[in-house]
Image: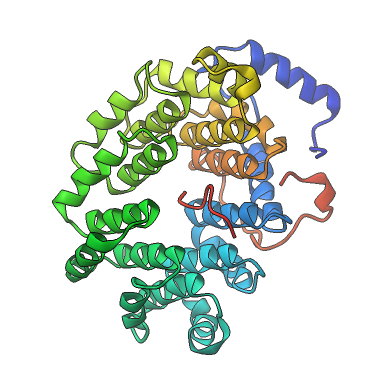
Length: 367
């Protein structure tokens, strides 16, 4: 990507930022950084990778919200089921009324993928149409595990405590761990105390992916013990991905230390070295491990309420991996809330020259 900054200015900024205290003042112009981050999200919607497009939709729902509502409506026509699912969930999360007609068409005849249909039902429910809600109960028993997981997620987001008992009955017979976790999180979101304790148990399994999902679920639900659990998971003996995820979760409950911030900066800038320092052999480190650690660090920094992190995140708008670019853009926008003037531009407009711009439940999921 070629930013508006000239090469000499970029070099000067890189030197200045690199030499500064990582918790010093922000160097970059906030308006310029905001525009670059916003452009990254918009261009990521056009990525050839469906996972990147889905990440971009989710990021826009978290940051741009209603301003991106019509983008979500357009994305309901995406060829990737994962992207359509993300778009429908985003519409439901912001209750974007102009999408209702399109959603009804999808529910009645057009949407062939039941994984997506769960999100369509949820979105319609947020728009005061419960015609298809009964479909979710049936989809809890679908042969496809992703359909079951998505149905549970939707039920949890609807906030109806009456769903706890049917979810509990389904959980007794569910064999897939990913579906179990979605059901447990849904029950916890609906107020089931035992499920809140089960989420904590997931953060202590031997499998890193399950632990990360458990941390993310607890960060969304925020049970009473969450700060204590996150603090324990952020200790030195924990693997770097777990530590970074826990530090990001701690930041969401407003517990940020200078050491926590610096650790996440290190994870973003030199993830491979961090993994080696933690005991991994360099030849055994997978590219996926590096990208995951950077993705977690970029997201974590966005919750730390330190504008100087924008200087650290901005170079990641050019990262080779699209999900890292999206995470960095989302965090920049979050950090700059209140630091930039409101804009009147249409958020659906694409950059004049796409070549000049950068391009979780969703993380790790496949189309």
